[in-house]
Length: 398
Ligand SMILES: C[S@@+](CC[C@H](N)C(=O)[O-])C[C@H]1O[C@@H](n2cnc3c(N)ncnc32)[C@H](O)[C@@H]1O
Image (tube, rainbow, N blue to C red; front, side, top):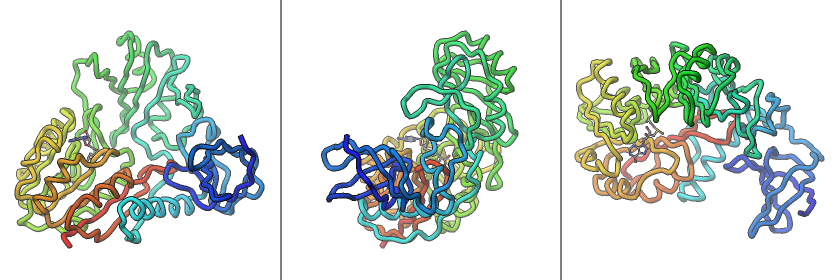
């Protein structure tokens, strides 16, 4: 371990500060661009990982983290930065990653940010002493007082929960009706834990392995749609930012009444349903049984007639792309399967709206797609305080 004086140049994707010294890169968590720090550095092959011992000169963009658990938790990587700096850093993450991995040099058209606190409608906990806990940086569970990203309904209920037994993982979700749903994993006495959760204010609990018999759904209103979401289906965690995406989508897709639009990785159908009124046909492709069932339900609930649902993996439903003029992609962090890229290269849609929660796989996939030019890129602060960022790239046939 070497002690080094380092000046932090920038914060890179992953949330670490980067400093260069003696021709080597040093990565230092919890630092800000412009900090000068004294750090203990552990050498790796091409770089070193350092821990701050003291801050010699703080950056002007630093501020006191609001969370009492900040350095223990590690969930929010950027809380020691002011909000303007966080936004700037995230803009840079997207632009830099697109250039480094995809060879795409582009300025963001816009970076859209909303409220920074209490935005998450879904949180995942372990348990400690019968209570919901987070796993800290050292991987050990700890009990938290405040969490500044938890939705306030969830926080209220979470604080009441005590006496759980055998629960390995607990997920709490909430919706527009402000009800709180729980998903439990582990080996436990269902009835006892369910009673504890109900008394704490949970409306409905489900264990995916030992399903209880009642069918209950979260409910969201957005983009003129009434959506139901099974407790086990994906839904965007930050509703305010989701709404900004839905508002922008018609402009980004540039829809036409002749268009056949594929919404691949469609979840409960949010994006496909929201553009259905502008186009001839929408095809949703979703792997999860819960998500695709919910999308069928949502199509009926919203009286939509021009949508087809393809259940299963996108890579196994490539015929859904036949004749598609426009495509919306919203894959998980791993990005697109190779066969999906091959299919898009053959089908040659006029336009792709690629929504991504991982700029690295977005950049990789754009590079593999033939014959498109990147017309615009937007950034969204879907996950404030963390280094994660959402982006949308608009690809047009060039
Ligand atoms: C990032 S979420 C997006 C969901 C939806 N677009 C939304 O915004 O609510 C990705 C979705 O893709 C689904 N999924 C993951 N891998 C898939 C695959 N190979 N084929 C089809 N769907 C997949 C997940 O179940 C999840 O619903």
